[in-house]
Amino acid sequence: MIVLKMIDRKSIRRGLLQIHLYGGLAACWYLLIYGISSLSFNHPWLLPGGTEDKTTWERPVNVSDISDNLKLAEATRDELGLIGWPLPWAMRRDEQNVLHFEHSRPGKKYWIQVNPAEKIARVEEQSAGLKSVVNALHGLSEGIPNSGYMKIWTIYTEFTTWFTLFAIISGIYLWAGRARDKKIALWVFSGSVAVSLGFMGYVYWIG
Amino acid sequence: MHTVIRTIHLYCALILATFVSMYFATGYVLTRPGWFGDRDPITTTRTEPLGEEARRFQPDDPAFLGWLKNRFEIGGRAGAVRKQQDGGWKVDFHRPGYTTSLTIPSDFANVNITESQLGWRKTWIGFHRLHGYHGGWLYVVWAFIYDLASLSMIVFAITGVVLWYQLSKNKIPGLIVLGIGFVYTLSTVLYLMYLP
Image (cartoon, rainbow over all chains, first blue to last red; front, side):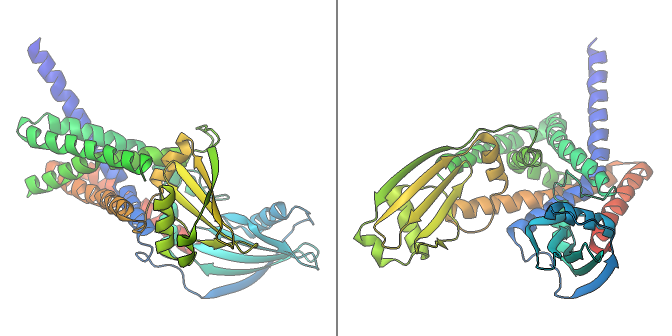
């Protein structure tokens, strides 16, 4: 009975280690993105932003004269085959009923003018740089409008989030099974939990 | 060498487990606004005289903001001081769970203080978004721990791959998993950088 229990425990440990190892290999690239983007939020100079260079182009668009600015902007985006979001706070119509709006997505910025009467869109685009891409990938869980490809990243986000929590717990369990590491590491862990929670509490209640 | 790498991997996890777990839990709440309900802020308002001492400051002087914090026992970090259309000034102090808005008229006679205690969801988001080396020693220490937690993600990833490489006899399955992840992540970055 005891032998069977030892075998079971060994199988559990082996299984957990395999999941920890291979899940970690799958998640490691996202963890690098998390780490680099988090550092970038705290140190905005870390990653290169975009350049000042702009490219201008125009294209016919088959859009109706929609009175709602956001709906017209979205229809224009779809006709142009762009991904991303028109910005509602950066829209205006001029006297000729031309809609001017800004459009945004990770990696690029656009300034678009669409004339529903002439059915022409004029687009100025500018690179937003590696910083905007890496920062946007941090925890991206809702995808980007018009991009089926980015739906895969949302799955990767979900997997990495849950796997990391699993990895912390399984890692501590796997470590705890090795007696010679236990004592010092237990003190370190207990101390860090107490200090971390205490510090968070201090920020919340005292600030 | 294996023992050194394993020790680094282990102690990074032990020291930063609480903070890393906090960031993943609060990040989950942040990215799912529809899933988690929240209550309206609980707001209290008071008006206090500023006194002659306040007139020696300029409104956007950091020393003035520090004076306001101590004088009226306000917690949190000051945002930018904004001039109002009526000539007065407004500044918000933020910390996870609380926002305090101060409105000062142009004659510096008094200050209107509105304190809002936020619900649990906005409090969690406040913890997640707290960064930057400014606002006093408390927030500098927080920013430092934030940097350690960020670096730990990179350390976990690299040391974890090294440990797998040292532990595995058959490296082919792991190399396939690693390769797929690398190609996919790189292609996603390039897709967003260069897609027309």
